[in-house]
Image (cartoon, rainbow, N blue to C red; front, side, top):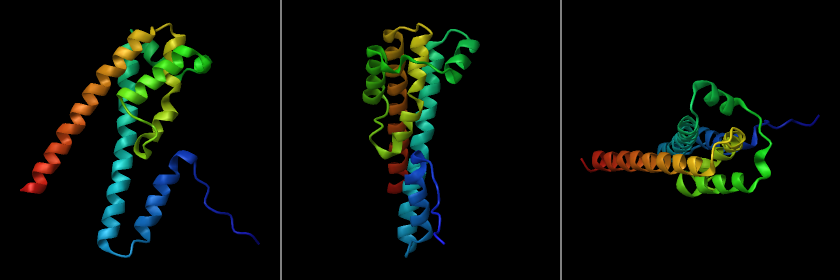
Length: 152
């Protein structure tokens, strides 16, 4: 009888690999290294979700619109505007080619939903820039605080 391997969603493969590496670590240092990588991956996912929610919030004028965008099913994926906005997000917020931020791909539908709501490309890009700047500032501040703690 053939053994069935663990089935994992594509977006969770790297997280599961890190979990296995943690379980199979040969030294406490190796385990700590993998735990740090897993923590950073989790943080990256959280940052992506936060950034997307903030962008949607800045681009909608009511709570109802906000929720419709979060839960909508747009067909605007093939438009030039969608591609322009998605690329802008990749440049100004999080590059989904980085494993830590790959989950960004799971949330790009929000841009199509915003475009369906007739939110202008300029408004979406402005929100992306504002959120991206805020996120980078927070990340730099946190990194500086961590460096200061390590020096002490």
